[in-house]
Image (cartoon, rainbow, N blue to C red; front, side, top):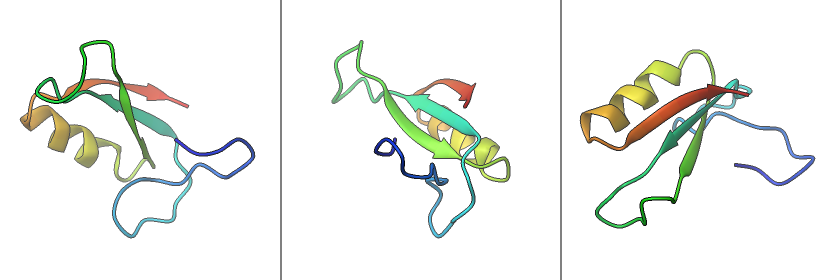
Length: 65
């Protein structure tokens, strides 16, 4: 995520749009089961980022911010 007070910007490459979603994931090969990584996503990239992680079996959930 971002530091407190900084704008939350989409994690998609080259995107500068405000984030509206937290795409929560975990790579079980390298992360402990309770570890959650977060990509921020704007409405335009939410599905693409979630699909990318889902194909790899990493997606946990997508939460609105």
